[in-house]
Image (cartoon, rainbow, N blue to C red):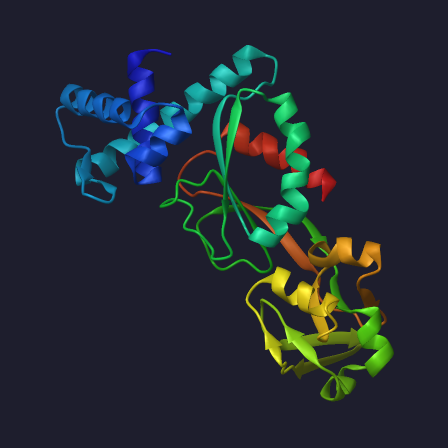
Length: 289
């Protein structure tokens, strides 16, 4: 790679990562190397592109304008390199943002085959149940479950899964099965992530019930673990409890009452083309979901 292209790629990655250390990890370089490369670039350009603080790196006004102009060029060069190799092999780094439960249950088990195809690719999983800012965090692609807020990010729907009401065999033996939403009042409910107003449809009838629970948690894993422990009934996506249902630790209930499915989308940062690695990963993952 030429020095100039390396400098431009380093600048783009540092601008999105917001730190020298994160950019160094993404590019496989040392932090002092990143600093030297960017200092040389600023000298060649003749302008201060980055504002350095003790904790972060931010774009100067000139840097923001420079990024907007050169990022499409860097993306096009990387795309051309990828096409010219002709092997489909990916290189560099791919930063993926996703929730912990979906990442551990559905994505990580599928990574080995993808990385076997692309041994020169490094993946950085940003596992976080709080939604990350794709630009600020330097994310190449995010996997989001549920409805999408208004955003300038480019989204692609990958799949959907049914919502599932489930409880342990021991709980159902002890407390019986609810047959309709009105029965929830006499049951122990576990409130997981998402709203506690649940909407059901049956025979054209749509019912919304506000659910109160003795156990509330913002993490799907906590809600599912509580249900397995016999603490009550929980609502999650089929992705979120498939393993427990297949083992018999949980049993689906009220399957004749339909709920809106849970969608999963891939989100790409606004203002720049999706990287070849991000597109290839989503093309690989989507059919499996």
